Image (cartoon, rainbow, N blue to C red; front, side):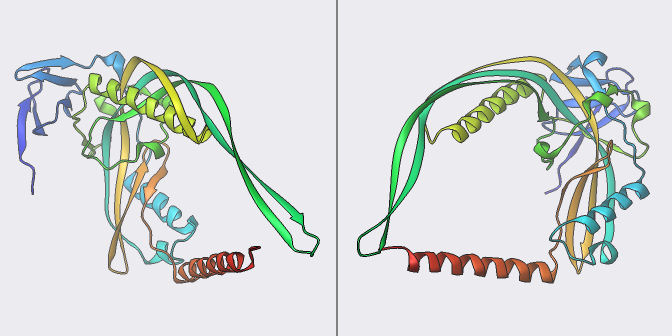
Length: 294
């Protein structure tokens, strides 16, 4: 279903801004004024000292070259992918991402599973293998201070975990530095919600780390604090291509020219190799079961 576009006027220059219902974070493409809606008719400016950007350093032709190189170098990709693919769409958008300074202190207590294998030879010459398991108490602490990334537009399919932002290259946002023809993406995540997501994210991150330390978590307590939040407008290229009548997509970051995520078909020899590896693993498992001492 096609979303209905609405119109509002920029509070700074009165220019029209197109948006979809639910969006609350806007940057005027004419004057660069950035603001969020509080309620109908009321707006809150995103102060210039809180809004930064990364510059796009790649033209459309240069980005096509980046994608072709990615196609050639990838493991498990069709050998003729770069030569036989047709790039059907190469579009640049400037995407809003919140960077929230967040800290977490976690204390935990749990049990670590320790396994050992003892092998002995009986008088009749047969070997006997015994597996022993014991549980060891383990306590610890974790501490982190991070710049947590929160995508300000929840409708976008952008794997933030794979996006490396060159924060040291950020500059104050200036509409003059937005590449001509690029699309400015509106947002639907305000600063308070970004803080909540950052706090929840680092808390889950610590729990995941604790799960790697112990096999059973008996107690865990995490204290989280969020500090400054900045809005980063980041150049993201969305590339679509066709290979043997199938469509695929690639996402690349326009500041450093790095492919963030991409779909690619496997070559026929790669498929055969993987099938062979799977067969070898299955055979090894079966032989291990058959030869395991009774």
